[in-house]
Image 1 (cartoon, one colour):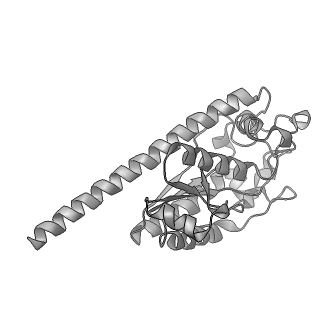
Image 2: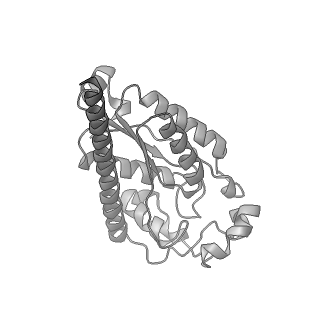
Image 3: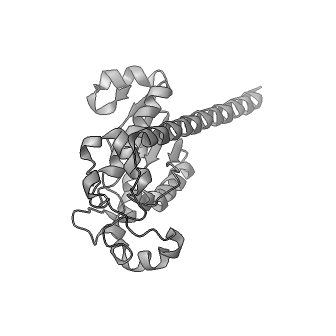
Length: 244
């Protein structure tokens, strides 16, 4: 596995000759209840990007983008948000820069609040002709800091999980909370910052979730590669016919 931060430019040059792909973990620094660290979304994004590199040859993992669009969590101390516009701009400029070196960029986002700016960034970048893929895990289960995320974090960094402080939050279906959440933030719908119930969370379940997500991510990247290769082949054939 290659971590960009630990490579020299000559190392990267060797990777580029083999068609290297840059995987960018896109996370957040925001509250995750009284039992999970602020780094939860970033930790998960990094873990998935690293698992991608283990499965797909030629993937280089970039340093994480650790600040996201987390304004809805601002009612809880410690949350740091840069907003949607900044997230979009950061990702657009980052991929533009990466395109000088890498054949493809994969944005691995583990924070739902980043979804809209990520989609807009990818739309802009593809319109400019960049080969970029955005992907995020679809865990199902609890929406925020419940059993799902707690299990995943127990599998990744159990030393950072405070199970003794874990408690259920608002367990109502998220769709019934969205209007108030968007208007007044998460603190208006949950006292402790949790949407769901972390009860029953365990590392084995988290490891299974991570494995499934990693396979889905690798499949998405491979499919994108094949699609781009096919498109390039068709373009080459068309240009060859024009020259004939």
